[in-house]
Image 1 (tube, rainbow, N blue to C red):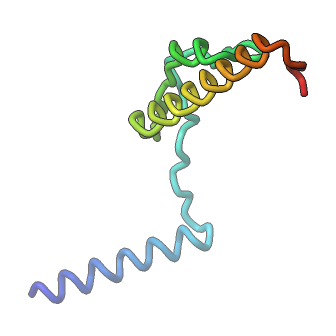
Image 2 (image 1 turned 135 degrees about the vertical axis):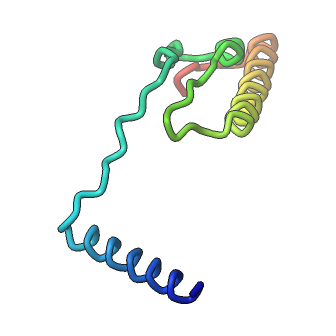
Length: 100
């Protein structure tokens, strides 16, 4: 009896898949993602201090907060490193052009 039930279930799944694939049955469309956090607004030339307060909202499908936080931390560390190097060059009287 189990095999009959599994066979009927398999036939039903295949039939529904075929109907959706051929366009005879409309599959539900996912709604547009919404966020509870305002859009990111960074200055034209962000510094490492601008990254600290960033918080990204989650949408219906979400994201991996830990991964994003690690990526932001790495970027913040890299910007801080670049800022220190820039200040060191300026302290030595080096030619520093911000848009170069």
